[in-house]
Each structure stands twice: as C-alpha cells, then as structure tokens.
Length: 363
Image (spheres, rainbow, N blue to C red):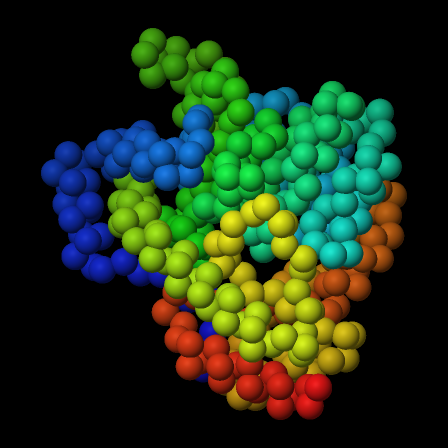
C-alpha cells in the first residue's frame, strides 16, 4: 500500500543527540534552550524575523488573532483545511467566505474585496498547496480597508516570492509543523510577525500573560508553548531540510511530466519557488475524479480529496455569510492529492502515474 503521506524521520541517533541535551538539563518546556535554538535557526533559514514557535499550527492562528484583538468577521477561503475556519470560529470571529481564483485556487482578491463589510476585521488568505496567493493584491486590500492580513502559511515552509520569504508578507503568517508537513516537529507551529511589538505581546500571551522577568501577569494569555522534546525533532529535521525539499520537488516535477495531458494542476505563482508540499491534480469532472480515486485504491495507492468539501457547505459554516462559492465548490469535487513524501521512490511515482493513465484511458 502506498499512503498519501508519510512523515519524514531523521536518523535516530541524530534525534537522540538532541534529546540527550534535554536530559542533561532536565529542562522540558518553558522556552528551553532547544526551542530558542530552533527559533534562531528557523529565522535564519527562512529569512524572517519575529518567529515564535508554538505547540501546533492551529494555536498559531488563534494566537495571531488574539494578539490583534480581532472582532467581527474575517474574509477567508473555503478551499482549505478546516482549521483555517475553525480557528477563527473558536475565537468568536465569523469566517466570511469569498470564492477562489479558478486558476490558482487561492483566495481571489477581487471576490475578497467584495465580501468586506463594516464588521470585517481581517483578511485570512491561505497559500494553498504551498502556492503563494496574490500577496501584493492582499497587501493593498488590507491597507485600503485598514484590515489586518494574516496568512495561513501552513503549506508554504521555505517558499520564496520575488526572492524573499512569503512569510514576510502581511501582519502575520502562521506555520504548521505537524508530522505530515515538509518540515515538522511531530506537533508544532509558529507565528511570524511583521512588527516586533506584536511578537513581544505574543510572547507574553503564549505563557499565560506572565512577564518572566518580573513574574507579574501583564496581559491575558494561554499556554501555547512548544516543548523541548518537540524542538529536538524539529532541529533534527531541520538538519536535513535542504535534501527533504529537493527530493520532494524532484518527485513533484516528475509527476507533472508524467501526467501531462491526463490531469491539470493549479497555476503556480510565476515568481515563487517550490517546496513539494503536495501533489494536487484536477480532473474533468467529479465522476472522473471518483473513478481515479477508487481505481488507485484498488491498486494499493491512497489518494485524498484535498480539500473537500468546500467549507462554505459544511454544517456550522453554511450561514448567511457563507455565500455561494462556485469555483471552490467545483474544485473540491475535481481535485485529488496524490502520494508525495520524501521516501517515495521515482519507481512508485511512475507506477502511480501509469495506473492513472490506465484508469482514464488513452489521451
């Protein structure tokens, strides 16, 4: 059986060397030395400042919303993982869905602009599949309406736009370090803030609002801290990250070549780098997509409808602000993510592509 994803595991002795440092100091959490080292190394690798490691990617989004004291509704995309919307709703912010661009399947800036009303406090776009959305347009839209722009960049680790990290756009960008991601710490995440003042407030909030210098409670807060054990895995994976991304991109490009004429893909940002986060393919209609999904499963290959359904149709989100989003709704019916992970072989990619060709028929 070929799974849709498989976590990258660094060499066990490399991981245990980091764990030995945890045992030597008996410092397991509360912004320990490994978390601090991971922060420093990630900032250097990604080319960003004000990166705050946290316990997971969903908490990263919730923390960003709290730092900016958001109230009302936030315009966001229905073509994404549910955490983008559920994190907003969990903080009492109503997700207000706008449709996606039919070429990129990222949030459409024009449709997003039409969805802004007097209760809108933020725009929350997603770099879907690691493909950067129109960051310049969203920067202008945020300034025009005096709104915070917070990017869900869970898929976009290591991605650059115009030679600079995509994480440098917006008021904040959030990352997921879940085990299924390009870079992971088993569970984990981070927020990258544009302004250092926002970072400093978030640092207080992530530790119950306690100022560790005075030990006074100076702000509202919660516990979003990353542990030393998770940071150890993150450091071990980060040691190998260039090879991880190189291998994933090579497999991504092989898929693109082999499936040319049999499926379509989202149009990638012309000035962006690749990280091989996902392998999305789109077919002519829902019937063909289901046929491919079932045929692959019969051959021992697990693909995934990702993302499905369009979140504006999900119970609990299908309210007055969940307007019809035809592009997202159709995209959710026609899109599959194929297996893509570092240990996947070229032979397995060729096998998967040949099975798809057999299922669809001659082109």
